[in-house]
Amino acid sequence: MSELTLTTAPGGFRHDPQYAAGRADAYDDSHTRTLDQLIAIAAQYVEHGHLLRALGYCDRVTEVRMERAMVAAAETELAHTDVKAARR
Image 1 (cartoon, rainbow, N blue to C red):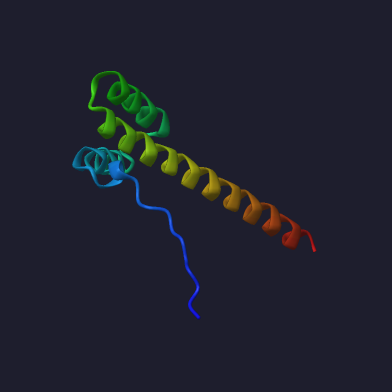
Image 2: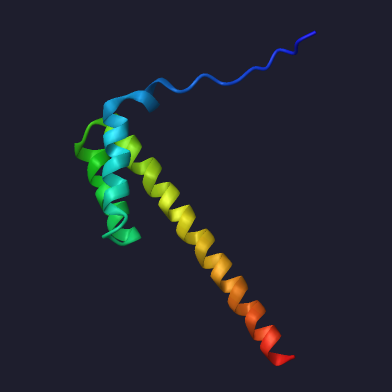
């Protein structure tokens, strides 16, 4: 007997060229700009750009923000652990 596995259908906008272009723009910008600059550019896309391009840009900016927060948390934990080890 086989078991039915349900998966969610991919969102229609995720395959749109404008969405992909927005993500690509944010990916490229994330290597040369600060998070505050990325957020400001995202606001410009939302106000003046194509809606799906803005959505793609904002999604990638959110991911960049979460990535940087996780790295900062990991580095903080590592530094705290290193200080404890050095005191022993």
